Amino acid sequence: MKPLVFPDFNPILVKIGPFAIHWYAIAYIAGLVIGWRLVRRFVTWAPVAGTPLLVDDFLSWATLGVVLGGRSGYVLFYQPVAFFTHPLSIFAVWDGGMSFHGGMLGVAVAIIWFCLKHKLNVLAFADRIAIVAPIGLGFGRIANFINGELWGRPAPAGWPGAMIFPRVDQIPRFPSELYEAFLEGLCLFIFMILMAQSEKRRRRAGALTGFFLVGYAVARSTGECFREPDAFLGFLFRGLTMGQLLCVPMLLAGIALLVVAYRSRPIPVAA
Image 1: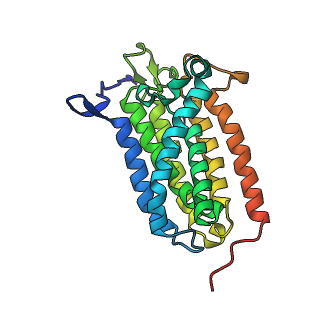
Image 2: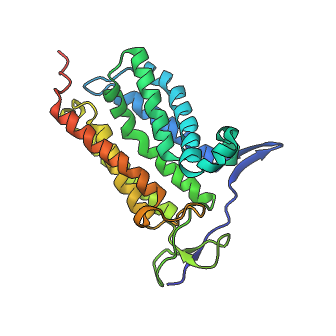
């Protein structure tokens, strides 16, 4: 089968004078807005984890957590030498480079801080956020594809859907960004929606967050098998990529959360 050729998308959606709106920014905004609208509904599911007004307040906290955590994670996990050489580079969001693992930690800090401030059950609130997290992940991967970045490894001859990325070389490669959008976005979102349907499961505070962490670790690690590792890192321990290594603590944390959730007393049913 003849390989496809990557379309030369313009990463900028609209440009007015010195101001430009990038597809990547649209992906982040879409993920946050759609997630916000859904969580407003999900927090009212029994057992109630908050109010729609509190979710409105949390949107700005989540945005800061994603952006600051994502940028910090990228610099510290993927380019630590550059950070120690130029510490202020951590604030250079316009240079690109975001890490989901860093963004997740940023949102986790925001959730804990916000819930303590408003006296909410941290794990129950986090469970509702976990349901919608795959939406932003899926949009982000599509933006990666539009930007022509994070391309895949060389594909076997005749691989259906193999694609040539002219900016890289003329070798047919896996369109790994689309694979990851499917795994981390669509599949994980469907999985989380199915898990969230059970009230008994929702009463196990932390269970949905645990399912998300395990699900993401599996989806990301699978997608990384098709993705070319970052040139400045390459393959690391035993042929694993940085993304796969960072998924190990996520997987362990998810399993630990599930164990704690199912060994702890469930949230009581409201009278």
